[in-house]
Image 1 (cartoon, rainbow, N blue to C red):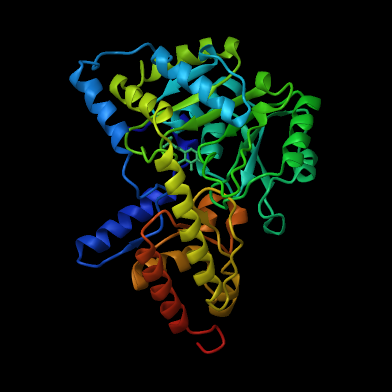
Image 2: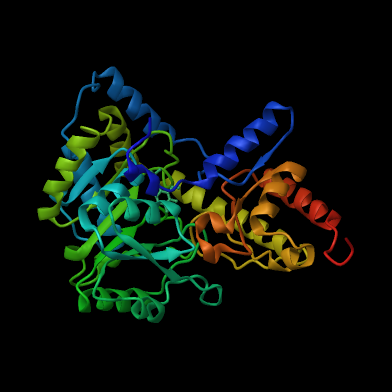
Length: 396
Ligand code: PLP
C-alpha cells in the first residue's frame, strides 16, 4: 500500500523533529533549554481566555460561516488600518491558523509550472506548499550585510515570464529581518511591472522593535495583487488556539471560501470570539511582550557575540536570532546540522540548524528567544562551555 504521489513533494518543519528529540532527553531525566520552537512563552491574555470560555458557555459551539464570524471579519478589517491597509470584512477570510491560509494562498494562486520567488533562508512551509500546488520555488537570497532585508535587485534578477508570485515575510523567520519603506516601494513597483502576486506573511507584524509596519498591501495599487496572511498565534500568544486569516481582493475571497468549505468547513466558533476579544480589547499585553522581547534579544545577541567563532546581527523584529557560527564550524569541521544535533545531545540546548530554512542557512543556527531570561542565560552558559570543549580539526 502507498500514499498518493502528490504527498511526496511535501516538506516539513524541523522544529517539530527537534522538539521530539528534546522530549526524549527530558523523558530520560535531562533538563533541556528550549530555543527551537517559535512561540511566545507568555500565556494568552486573560481577557481573551475569558472570551473563549464565555463563548463556550453561551453555546457558541456550532458551525460558523465558512469565511468566518462576521464580527471577527469586521474587526480584522478595521485592525488593518494600523498598518495602512484599507480592507472591508468581505476581503477577510478566517482560518484555523496562518498556516492553512498559506496553503490556501498557494492553491489559489499558483498554477502548475509557475515560478514563485521564495526567501532563502525562509519558513520551510512556503517551499512545501508551492511544490504541492505544482509550482517551482525560486530562491531569492537575504543577505546578512543588508540585515536580511529583501534585496530588490536580487529579486528582480530572478523574475522570468514564468514568475507568478513573490513571497514576503516581514519581519522574517528565521532572521528577524525587516524591509525599509524604500525596499517595499521598489518591490511594489516590481510586482506591478511584471504583473505578479505578492503573498505577504505578516504573522510577526507587531513584533518589531522600531514600531514600524511592513505591509506591502498598504501601497498604492497593491491591495488588488496582495494575499496578506496573518494570525493570532504570535502576537496574542495563541499558538494552540489555531486562529489566522487571509486578506485578499473580494473576487478571490469567494473561491478561497469554497476551499475552506472543502477543507475545514469553518474555524472553531468560540475561538473566533476569543480572537475578537484579542483584537478589540486592551493591547497592553502585546506591548509588554514586545518590550520584554527586546531585552531578551539584546541579552542573547550579547551572549552569542561573546562566544569565539560566533557573530550575530541584531534582529529588528520577530523573536529569533540567526547567529553565524561558521567560525566554530571551520575550526571543528562540523556541519551546522551536526552542531545543532550535538548541542542538544551534549549540552541539552535545543536549537535549529540554519539549513532547516533552506541552503542559505548554512553556517547558522536559529534560536528563539521568546523564553525566560534565566533560560537564555543557561543556554548561553551551556553553549559556551560546550563549544570550549570541542577539539579543533588540526588537533584531532
Ligand atoms: N508564518 C511564519 C513565518 C511562521 O513562522 C509561522 C509559525 O511558526 C506561521 C506562518 C504559522 O502560524 P500559525 O500558528 O498562525 O499557523
